[in-house]
Image (cartoon, rainbow, N blue to C red):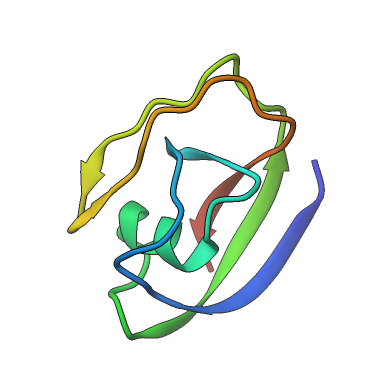
Length: 82
């Protein structure tokens, strides 16, 4: 349940697995664009909350970014605007 704040620059491509809850190795900049928190190339501060990983991660297409499905993974996070 740890919470962190990062300044990220949005990216439209890179590793991204999950929707709303992302695998621990998902690029925060890509996930932030996928969530609609920032546009690609724009910087913003986002809140990153470590959460218990779900049994599987569902991918989706949002805001020009496609995330992918993934099975069990050891860590996960959720993003929010600051």
